[in-house]
Image 1 (tube, rainbow over the protein chains, first blue to last red):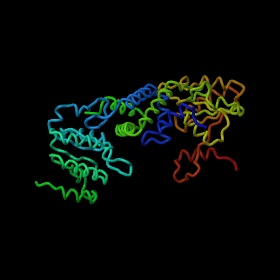
Image 2 (image 1 turned 90 degrees about the vertical axis):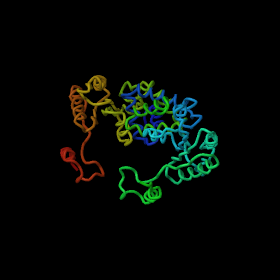
Image 3 (image 1 turned 120 degrees about the vertical axis):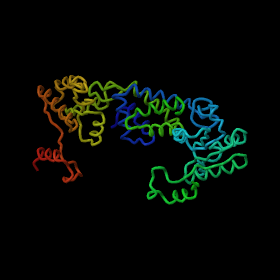
Length: 199
Length: 199
């Protein structure tokens, strides 16, 4: 025996969220039913609207319900002529929280992964190439993750970009600030030696 | 700068779920937007329906969208004449998963906590007393949690029940099966000695 059909359905639907198991889903459902009916309805509304209305920015492919996202729509961000390529919208937020980058972004929404059916088309590389071909862009910064797939994707995009007149760079990999050399893996250490800068 | 308004709103609403922080909420929102739009809409529907339609069983106060829950509606469960008092609907599920109890439940939806404004009325004790006064019930099993509040609630309910002709019992507290004496706290050990059964 389980709970009533509607409660069971709610628990089942909550289990679909990443990182939520059966026990957490049950706890969430009861908390909402007991104390947060308003919050539950607000969440239902927010989900409904976001799932139906949020699409992709026509310039950088990040999530937005507008034609262009706020960054792409800002004339200031186009002045630098820089495009930073990242894998996910969360990466955009991470870079924006630093506030040191003034150019635009291009969000791949993934990385090259032929076995999963993710090729250049899925990553919107045609759209990126059109932007590189325009006169506005003079630098391409590749900020995909430092993983095998991220590196492969960065190299693939660099090959495309070489056909256009743009500077191409990859963000530096090395010892993170506050980290201790002793605990950094050897690959990262090797990369930090390769990427050393003159003082 | 943050994400677009709809995405921000979704992340904010997801943060309202228990155990979900800003980073998890962001991950959930992106996962739903990227890969699970159908699941997201299903969750919105389930939330909407559950928040609007799920009420309380008129007999035992557990969550149900019907007038009575499945257990209270089953004639078999009334034969034993036993009522088990628990704090939450999740406790009902825990006891039901054992399958050893054949009576009905009464769900307090909390415990006595005067400072939080939770008194006998909030726990539905009038409804419980009406049921105890009827001829159907001959045993009351108190299965509130073995905490200070749970014990106080159990004692309060026992006082009420003594005015009616019912057997009153409290579930046993002691060393859990599979546990080791060495690691059991002294209060539990003392309770397990007090509650020892003749062999």
